[in-house]
Length: 112
Image 1 (cartoon, rainbow, N blue to C red):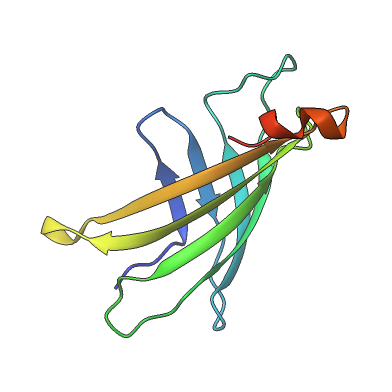
Image 2 (cartoon, rainbow, N blue to C red; image 1 turned 180 degrees about the vertical axis):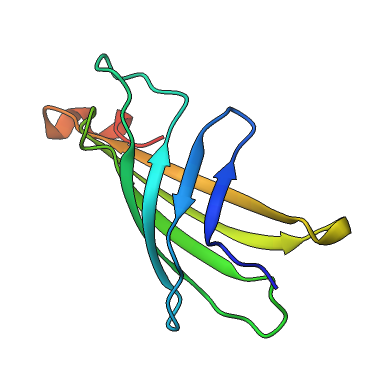
């Protein structure tokens, strides 16, 4: 059964720590990104999310990261946890990043 609690690292070296997942699937933690286009130094950022608690353990989940400590942007991640060979857990995710823009005509370039 996949358990999101603990430390995770992606292919780019970004890390996240998920605190205990409660009985409803809610969790919080910190995200430590290794990549950023912001001009300020990168700092840990808070995350909050929810996990769908499945009987088969291959749960879906989603979380939001507020980059408020160094950037005017917010990211959302959605994914699924897979149990792979040897009992290791692997997270597969997709994400969207919304950057602040100065005007409505610039809205087209605000989401990656």
